Image (cartoon, rainbow, N blue to C red; front, side, top):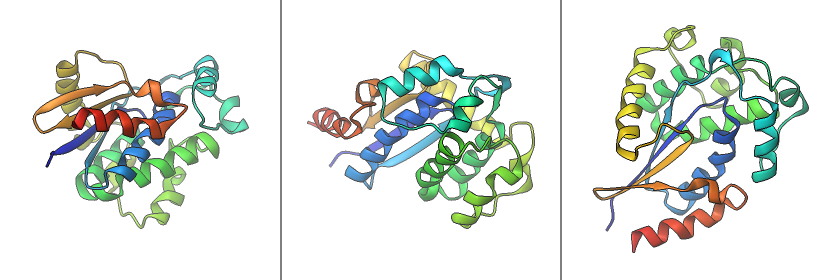
Length: 200
């Protein structure tokens, strides 16, 4: 019996991270008992954006959809600090909800055009999942939980020898495997076959 864990290094406001989440969903469906750790790298802090060129590249290489509102604001600065705080809190307090919450928030941002940069922006998803995050989540600076996550991310990046994100690292017993998730953006279900090979 293999001990499986999956680490996803991402940013909530990154189009490539959004395009990679269906791969996580496919793995979670196939391996429901596998622990999935969602680590927000807090790259987008209000100083830059992914940009329209990146969005267009994601459209070509994946099946995810972007709303007209999102596309029109693609070149505007993005700030994922509150999202990093919220996801770090959920990972600590209610990890079983993490993936579902991430899916819902990405839908809010990329398909509903929700900026996810103020407390009110999060209210629909907080209500949907009956969450009660503390006030520190909605500050404009990283919470301690989010800062601790960044330390963990740096350690994992040293192990896999890359600071690129998104990144998916599969732990099989004591072995770490960097999954080439970009190969599966158009057909997320195919990642299941790749992981099955790793388990043999």
